[in-house]
Length: 352
Ligand code: FNR
Image (tube, rainbow, N blue to C red; front, side):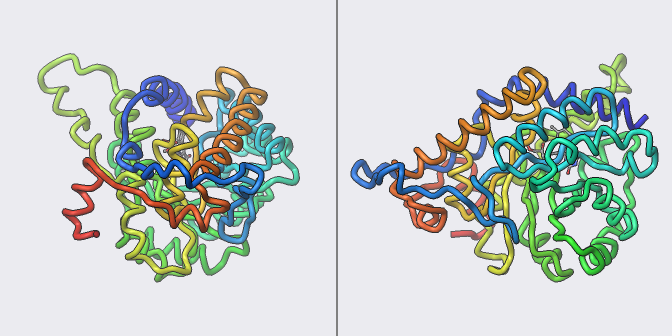
C-alpha cells in the first residue's frame, strides 16, 4: 500500500509540475522596485547562505520527496549525484517505510552512497518517536532530520492518520533527544507564525514554511481516487480542501511575528531563480525546490539536475548583481512591493 501510494505521488506530482511551471502563484505578488543604477559587479556577489549550522554555496536545497520503491531509487540516485556535484543539500523522502520494511532501505541509502560528504537530511512524519528519529538519522548517516507536519494531507489520504494530538509532545522529545538539528516542515500548506511560535517553544530552531502554490497534496490525494461514477461518490471527494493553506509569501510576511534566533527557510511553488531571490528578500535564509527538481530528475537524470542547479546558482548571482545586493543581508534591504492576493491576505491579518 505504502509503495503504490509513493509511486502515485511521484507520477501525479510530475504531472502537476508540467502545469505549475507556467502558472502564476504568490511569488508573482512580490516585485522588486527596479532601480536602474543600483547594480554592482557580478564578481562582487556572494550567494552563499547560512542554513542553521550549515554554510551552503547557494541559497537553495533539494527538499524531501521520495524513497521506498523501485521508481524512487533512480530518482534519489540522480538527485544525490547532482547534490554531490553542486554542494547543494538534499533531503530524503519519508524513511518511515524503510524502518518498517528494511528491504526498501536501499532506495534511501543510495542518497548517502552517491553523496558521501554532502549535507543530507533524513525525513520522517510527525507522530514518530525519538527511537524512530534516531533510526532515520542512522540510516542515512544524516546531518539533520526533517520532520513533516502534514495534517491536511493526512486528512485527505484514505490511509492517513488523524491522530494529531500527540504530535507536539513527540516533536519535543525528538528535539531534546536527537544529536543532529531538527527541521520542521509542512508539505505544501504553510506554517503560520502561531505554529512557528509553538515549535520554537518546544526548542525547534529551524523551520521550513513549505507553503502552497506548488505541489498540492490535497489535489494529488484526490486524483489518486478514481473518478466519481455516481452522484454520491462526488461527495466522497475532498476537492474543496485543495485551496486551504498559506503560501510561502503569506508565511514570510509574518516573519516579524516570530523569534529572531530562528532559521526560517521557505519552499512551496518555487519555479525559478527569481522566486528564490524573492523569498530571500522577504527573509528566508534558504529556499527549497521539490517538484521542479523531481521533474528534471525524471526527464534528464543526474546530469540534468546538475545543470539546472548550476543554472540556478548563476542566475541567482546575476539577479543579486542587478539588484545591487552583494550578499543575503544586503538583499533583505532591497525595496520590495507586495501586491495582489498576498497584500490583501496580509492586510486581513493586520500585517503591515
Ligand atoms: C513531497 N514532499 C514531501 N515532504 C516531506 O516532508 N516528506 C515526504 O516524504 C514528501 N514526499 C513528497 C513526494 C513528492 C513526489 C513531492 C513532489 C513532494 C513535499 C515537498 O518536500 C514540498 O514540501 C512540496 O512538494 C512543496 O514544494 P514544491 O514541490 O512546490 O517545490
